[in-house]
Each structure stands twice: as C-alpha cells, then as structure tokens.
Amino acid sequence: MSFSSKTKNELSRLEIDNECCLISELAALIRMSGSIQMMGLGKVNIKFSTENAAIARRIFTLLKKLYNVQSEVMVRKNRQLKKNNSYLMIVNNVDEAKRILEDTGIFKKDSANYFEINYGIPDRLVKNRCCKRAYIRGAFLGGGSLSDPEKTYHLEFVTNSAKHSEDLCKLINSFGLNSKIVTRKDNFVVYIKEGEQIVDLLNIIGAHTALLKLENIRILKDVRNNINRIVNCETANLSKTINAALRQIKNIEYIERTIGIDKLPENLIDIARLRLINREASLKELGQMLDPPIGKSGVNHRLRKIEQIAEEIKKERGELDGKKNNYNKK
Image 1 (cartoon, rainbow, N blue to C red):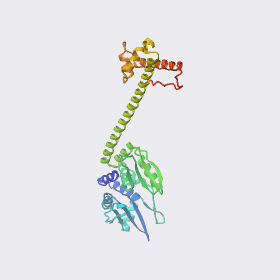
Image 2 (spheres, helix red, strand yellow):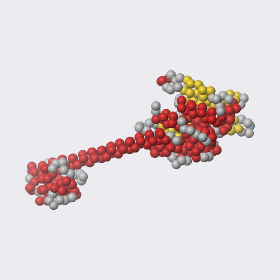
Image 3 (cartoon, rainbow, N blue to C red):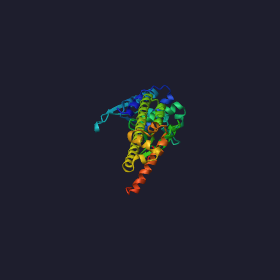
Image 4 (spheres, rainbow, N blue to C red):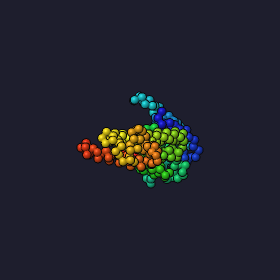
C-alpha cells in the first residue's frame, strides 16, 4: 500500500462530532470526487467514485450522520492492469440530493428558481478554523495524493475547476503555508513540495501517524545527506593533501638529485628531510617535528620556497615545461 493510501486510510478513521466540520468535509469530497447528474424537471442526484474502500465508508458515514441517507453502493472490478475495485455511491433521492448540494454550497437558487453551480468555496463553510481543517482533509481524501517521502516531497490536490483551485490554495495558505497552482492537462493542481510544509499540512488535517513517519524519514535522509557531505568533503581534502605531499616530495627529490639538499638555505634543509621521511604527515604534523616547532603557515611557506628553488633549477637546466606547479596551500 502506498504512503498516500495509508495516509487516507488514517484520515478516514478520524472521528468528527461537529456538524459544521462534517458538512465542510462532505462539501470538499463532492467537489473533488463527486459528480452531479441533472435529469430534467428539477431532478438531480449525486455520485461519488473512489478506489479506496476506507474513503467509500467515510462518505457513506458522512451521509448517514448528516442526512440519514441510505446511498446506493456499487462495487466494480477493475480488470485493467489489475487495479483495485472501484466503489460507486449514488444519492438517488432528489430532495435529499438537493438539500445536500444546498447545504454544501454547491447549489444556489437564483431568482428564476433554477439551480446554479458554485465552483468556489463558500465562506460560511470555512468560517471556523476547525471547518477549514475539515475542508482541506476532505479535499485530500477526494482528490489528493502524497508521494513516497523516501523518493521526493510532493503533496497535491487535483481539481477540474480553476475557481475551486484558487480558493483551495488560499485556504491552505491561510495556515501559513506556501501552496501553488499548476495546470496539468484539463486539471488544476494545488501542490506543496517542501517537506516541512507537508508535515505542517498533515498536522492540520489530522494525519498524525503519517506525519511521524514522514518526520522519521526526513531525519534519516538529513543524517544520510550530512554524512555524505562530510565524507565527500573529507575525501576531497585528503586528496588535495596527498597530491600536495607528492608534489613536495617530487621537488625535494629533484633538488637532491641535482644540487643536493645540503645546498638549500639552512631553514629549508630540516623541513625537506622531514618531508622525505614523513611522506604522509600533514603540514601541522611536520611543523611539530621541528625544533623549535613552527605552525602550519610556516611549514607551508618553507615548502613553497623549496618549490620555487626546484623551478629555478629546472629553468637553468632547461627542464622547465612552462607549466608552473600550483602549490596548494592546504
């Protein structure tokens, strides 16, 4: 089962007592996963379609609690690509369907007594903070999805109405989040891509178990990333140190073959011999071996002098290839 399905199953089991929150959640479910069928002569019914059994039970429970409606339930087997079952619920009672659509702000009677569809989110449905949370929860159950956080951080709501996507985006952002809208084919997608903000949204809609799992994954990923950065940094520094040491040794050996180390200035002889004996030592370690000890910058300065002397010898002997060795200060 996907991380998104587990989150929806958790949300579908949440208990809600406030009628206002039940209506808000139902309103979002109708807009996201429901459809309205006009049959003429003022007749209308409501259809819900979902592949998640827990969401189907949630819708059935909401209708039962709010309106005591016995909706017709049908289960269809999806044979294509061995997909899950599809659950279809229909509210056939015309009067109850109209009442539901009016209560959820989807239908609004005009002066001519015809029903007009409202694609936005009515303010009265999300006046209270608890109702805002319920509406977002219903929107996620009806048309939301959450990517596997092991791979990427991405949460989205897919709706086919530009007005609804704008209102939903504003509703989510009223909690201090930064959701955005993108068009995908004929749909409008409200999405969040930052892991921390996805955690905040899961907290808002009440998916606390999913929140904890996502936080654990985020912590483990951060630890792995930090370790990788440290290892890469240490590896790069070690590589630079080794390359610098090899270059220093090469210069000292060249001087020894040509003029001899004893011909170097007195303050360079000791450091040259120490470098040949201690090929893997750092600049700091070489400095501590001297008597009296000197710091890393002092060792670095002396080795640069040795490099310059080696280049001068090569130039005098006509062996300089024109490519000056760049001494790494590290």
